[in-house]
Each structure stands twice: as structure tokens, then as C-alpha cells.
Length: 228
Image (cartoon, rainbow, N blue to C red; front, side):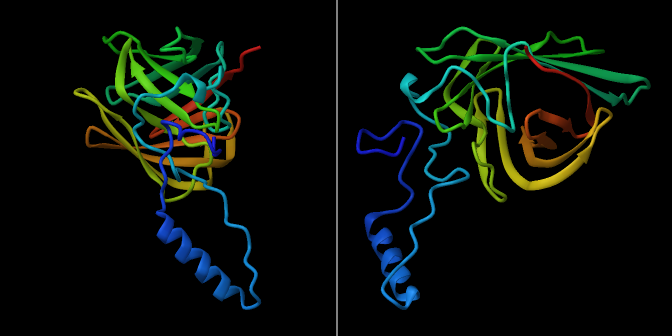
């Protein structure tokens, strides 16, 4: 997306031309012999506008295959945790193809929790061409400005807004990118660890490469069925 055409609605410049010139001059001085290494490409959440305004369908792809949050339709994740009143609580998460939103391919993720009176929750996601996964809405209600669910290249220390609506206020920070975690199904390494603050409640989520969310607080993955 970094070309000479119009700036994507998902991106914003992070450095002024004056600052870029100063950095280039400093690099030349540091080089000592009049040469400088090529600047590093953006990573983490560099240049992303979060939340994003007026997302353009041309910026998005048909599937969510971010390695830390793969959401292939037909995939199913099952988690278990101890209940405060005894027994265990089972949470089942299923990914399905959703309806397009303004020309953007949407993947629906439905979460069903046992022992919970509330109906299942369905969240709507889409992935941009760079591999970033965006959270577009919940239960058919679309956010005015989609938040970021998972960066293409998570970087320790990056923070970002996941959702901000009348009913949702969710922020995340990348705590680790090289951790390991034990779940009832397996031990995963490396994992990306997000510290998520959801309406003031802090949670820790662990994402394994090629699998996605494998632990959320005390709820650990017990089964993972990959779509054919």
C-alpha cells in the first residue's frame, strides 16, 4: 500500500518531511563514510490509523489468514475454564463467512459460552492487504470506525484501540511476542501476548502462530478443528 497513489484510509504518515530529513542527515553522520543503511520498513502499528475511518474495499482481501489470528471459515476452537460455582465452563468459537460490508469481505466469529443465559455473540472481522485484522462490529451492529484486532507484525510495546462505541471500550497492548504457554491441548511457542483492557477489566490473551487464541486468562484451548 505504500505507493505514489492516494493514501489508504488505513494508513497515516508518522513522520514529517523535516523530521525525515533530520533523521537521514543523522544517519549519514553516524555512517562516518558518507553511506547509510536503507531505512527499516514500517512494522507493528507504524503508519496505521487506529481506529480507521471510511475503510476502502480495495484495501482488503477475501480471507483472514494473519498467522496470529487465522479465521478460516469452518474452523472451531474450544476452551475450558473452572467455574466459580463449581464445575467447568466450555466456550466454543466458530468462524464462518459473513456478509460483505460495503464491498469488504467479512468473517464472522461466533462465541457460545456454556452456563451463560445470554445468547451467543458474533463479531465481524476483515483483513487488509498488509495482513492487519480489523474488528468491524458485533451482532450485526457496525462500528463507525473499525478497531484493530491483530497487527500483521505484532511488536512488543505497541498499544492500539480495538473498539470504542457506546457499549464497548477495548484497548490492547502487545506484552510479549516470544512467550510460551501451556493449555490442555498443547504447549505453544512462540506466542504473542496481548494485555487487553475491556471496559476497565484487564485480561491476558495468548495467540499461537497458525492457531490463533489459545488462552484467555484461565480459559485454555482444549480442541482446535481446522477448516478443510
